[in-house]
Image 1 (cartoon, helix red, strand yellow):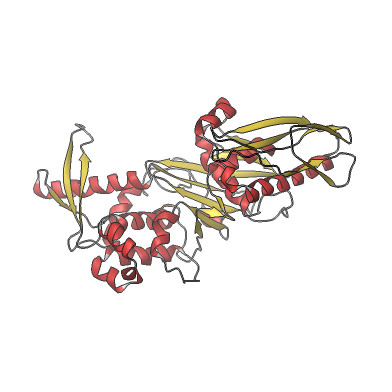
Image 2 (tube, helix red, strand yellow; image 1 turned 180 degrees about the vertical axis):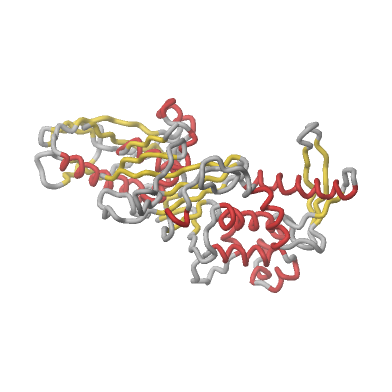
Length: 416
C-alpha cells in the first residue's frame, strides 16, 4: 500500500512550524509519533517521511512525499487511515492560516487527472470531514451532509443518496462519483448547474422583466417594472439582446409591485422546472437528479456560501434553527421595502440599512431566488433545517481541504 503525506506552506510567516506527526508502525499496536520531518525513519520495517510544515513568505503550495507501507494486512491500512485523521486534525486545528492552496499550484500538482468540475465534490469532502461524518473513526452508518454551494455563475449540489430498496438506483452518468476514504466506499450524486448562480439569475430576471415591459409597449423602454426589486426601489442594469448582442441601460423599478410572491412567479420561469426531462427524475432545467424526497428524506443539509446573503439579516440572538421557510419569511420582509425594514431589527444596524438594503435593492431578488432554488428546484420541504456557514471549527469551507484529503489518503472517480 502506498500512502502519501502532505506539507502545507504558509504565505505569511517566515518561521518554521513543527507538528507531532503520527507514523504507523506495522509491528506496533499504536501510532508512534515523531517530531519534525523529512528525516527518513525506519519504524518497524516501514520507511517513513514525517510531515513538516514549511512556512515561507514567497508563496503557497502543497508538497507530497511518498512512503511505502510494507504491511500486508488490511488492519494496517485502517490504522494508517486513523493516523491520517489525527494528522489532518492537527493541521486544521494548529495552523488554520496555512491551509491555503493556490489555483496554479493545484493545477501543477493534480495535472489533467483532476477536473475542475469536481470542485463541488471536494467541498462536500471538506464539510463532511470537518463535521466528522467520513473519518476512519466514524461509525459506518453515520449519515452524511448534503452540501449546496451558490456562486455567481453556478450552483452545485452534492449528496450521498440513500437507496432503501433494490429497485432504487443512481443512474450512470457524469453526475455519479465514487469516493474511497476512511475505510468506506461512498457513491455520491453531484451536479453543477451552470447559469444558475446569483449573478446569472439576476441577469435572467432583469431580461424577463424587460421583455414583459417591451411586449406591453411593443418597443424598448427606459424603465421596466420588476417585482423582484424591493418595493419603492430602483436599479439601473445592463440588458443584452440575445439575438443582436446589443446592450442598453434599463432602469428596473420595484415601484409598488415589488413582492416575494410576484418575484417567485418570475423566478419559476428562470428555473425551467417544466423543461423536458429525458432521464427521470429531474430537479430543474431538465437535469437528472435522484429525488431528495425519496433518496435523502431525513439527511442533513449544509448551505455553503448561502451564508453571505442570509446571515446579515438574521437576528444574532436567535436560537431557532434555520429552515427553508426561514428564507421565505426573510425574503418576504425584504421585498416589502423600507417601511418594513424600519419595523424590523435591521433598523438598528446602520451598516446593513445604508450600504446594503438601501443601495442594493436586489436583496429581494437574491433571497427569493435562493428560496425558489431550494424549495422549487431541489424540492426541499418548508420545514427542512438548513444550517449555513462559512467555516467549521475555524476552518473555512471550500474545495481546498477536500482536494488535499483525497490526494493524501483517498480516491475519487466521477463518471464521464
